[in-house]
Image (cartoon, rainbow, N blue to C red; front, side, top):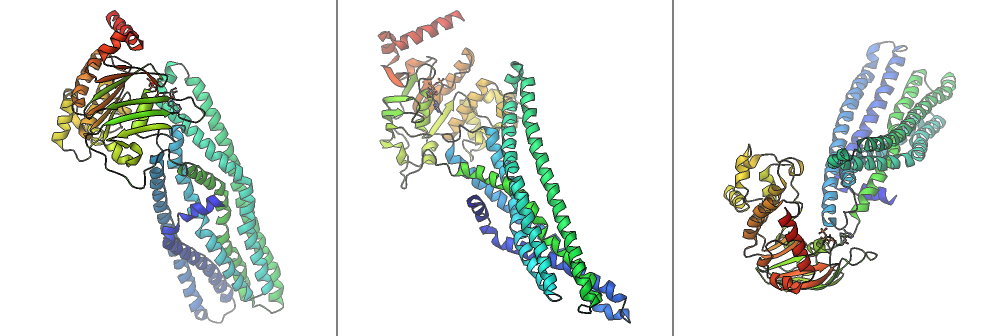
Length: 578
Ligand SMILES: Nc1ncnc2c1ncn2[C@@H]1O[C@H](COP(=O)(O)OP(=O)(O)OP(=O)(O)O)[C@@H](O)[C@H]1O
C-alpha cells in the first residue's frame, strides 16, 4: 500500500490532465450507454408509434451519442497516454538523478544489466499502473452509480441487482485476479531483470565466453532462465483468460437477470414494453466501465514490484554527501593525507592504515606497491567516492568534506588504467571534459596528448565514430584520449592511477611523454607498480597491505635495499630479458 501511494504521488503534477482523462472516460461510457439506450428505444418504439417522425428527437440522440462516444474515447486515449508518457519521462530523469550520487560506492554490487532493466523496463512497467489503475477506477465508480440511478427510475430492485453485478465485476474479479497474479507478476519482473543482467554480461564478455568455450553452457543457462520466464508468462496468460471469461460471464448473467426481472413488470403493465430492450442493453453497456478493472489489477503486482525495485535504489543513503555550507576549492592546492585509515565495510579488513603524506602545489608524489596494496583506494578517497574511516584528506588545508563534491571533482583530473570511451565520435568523447571547447582547443589538447597523428589517419578525423568502449582505438590511443581530456579539463590536481598498466614498453614511453607535459605545474599523485621515471618524483611512497612501509626519493629507496629496491631489480631484470 505504501509503495502504491508513493507511486501515485508522482501523479500530482499531472492532476489536471488526469482529471481531464477521467472526465473524458465518463463521457465515453455515457456516450456508450446513451447510444445503446436510445437505439434500443428507437427500434422498440418504431414498432408501436403511428408516425416515424415522432421519433425524430431519439434518432438525433442516437447520432449525438455515437459521435460523443467516438470523440470522447479518442481524446481520452490521447490525454491519458500523453499524461502517462510525460510522467514516465519525469520518472526516468528522477531515477537517473537519484542514481548519480550513489555511484560508485553504492552501485558496485549491482549488475549493469539490472540497473538498465530498472531504468528502462521497470519505469516502463509503471505505464500499466498509471494508465489502467487511476482514472479507470474513478470512471467505474461514477458510471456504476449513474447506471444505478438510471435503473432506479424503472425499478429499485433491478437497480440493486445490476449494481451487485457491476460490483462483482469491478471489485470481485479484480480481487481474484490480483490474488492469482500477485506472485506471478513479481516473479516475472525478477526473472526479466535476471535475464537482462545475464545477457548484458554475456555480450560485454563475449570474447572471454568464446575463448573459454563457455558459449554452450551460457546458452543453456540463458534458455533455462528464458523457460522460467515463459512459464510465468503462461501463468499470467491463464489469469488473463480467466479474468476475461469471468467478466463476460457476469455481464451476460446480468443481462439475463435484468430480462427475468423486467419481463413480469412489462407484463403487469408497470413498465412500458418499449423500454425492455433499453434496460437490457443499458445493463450490457454499463459493463464497459467496470471491465478494465480486472486488467488493472492483473498488472498491479508487476507495477508494485517495479516500484519497489526503483525505491530500493532511490532510498539508499549516498555514501558521501555535501555539507550544508561549502567552500570554494583553491586553484593551486596542497594535497594532504593525515593519518588516513579506511575499510570498505565494517566486516572487511582495512584497505588503508594510518597513511600520511603531502604534495605541495605543483609537486609530484608516486605511490608504488603490489596489487591489492590500496593504491586505487587512495584515488577513491581523493575523489571522495568514499570518506576515510579515520584521519583526514585535505586539499588547500581543508578537509575534503568541506567542499561540494562537484566543485572538488572539477579540480581533479584523472587518468586511470581503464579509460571509459563512449560509443560516440572522438569529438564527443573529448567534449565530455570541456563541453564548450572550440576547435583550436581540441586540436591543441590532441597535439599535447600526442594524438594528432592518429586523428589525422582516421577516416573522418575528429568526427570518426570510435565504437562501443572505444573499440576502434588501441589501448595506448585510449589512454592518450584520457590525457587529452585532462588537458581540456584543466584541473590543477592530477591523479594518475596506473595509466600505463596495460601498455607495452614502446606505447608506455609515448604515453609517458604526454603525461610529463600534463604533470607540468599540476599537483600530481601517481599510482603505479611500474617503476618508470621515478627519478622525476619528489617523493615515492611504498604501500604494502594498506600501510606505507618505505618512503623517500628514488635514489634513497634504491640505496635502502628494501621492498622498493627488490621491485626495481625484478623489473630491470624483466626489461633486460625482453
Ligand atoms: N569496493 C570494494 N569493496 C570491498 N573491498 C574492496 C573494494 N575495492 C577494493 N577493495 C579491497 O581493498 C584492498 C585494496 O584494493 P585496491 O584496489 O585499492 O588495491 P590496488 O593497490 O589499487 O590494487 P591493483 O594494483 O591491483 O589495482 C584490496 O584488498 C581489495 O580487495
